Image (cartoon, rainbow, N blue to C red):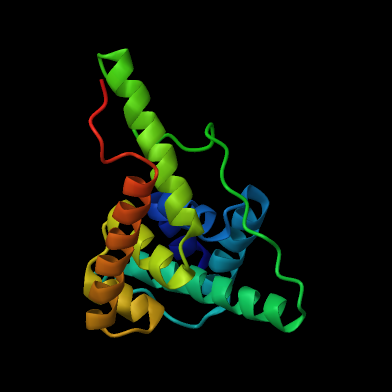
Length: 177
């Protein structure tokens, strides 16, 4: 891959890839390293991008595979670092509304959902993140993670079910006055 192609990719969807790296690593420093490794790996590859196909998915796959590889290395060395949750100031999922009370409850709910998703096993967290935050189709997620589409659908369903259950346990299913 040529440097001009990489530069174009960074301009077009670099932000999405960085956000994905941040979601995977749950640490700004690790996400920056993974982001740089992703584009370096793409630059080193002899593959040419087909802009008619989805080149964005290629970079998500590279980032995901590098992350998995790093996790395996860490596991082999018995030095798995704990995942750290993001600060509230790092990412705003919900924009402010007109009603301050509703806005507060939305932010509180979004923070709780983010915490729950961060605590899910990676086999549920990754498909949920790719599907809901980055709008990838089930088939694309399957190709990126190396799992069949049916498995991706099952993990999305089970992940939503776990999130709903944990939200109800935390009291989010009740009416607020």
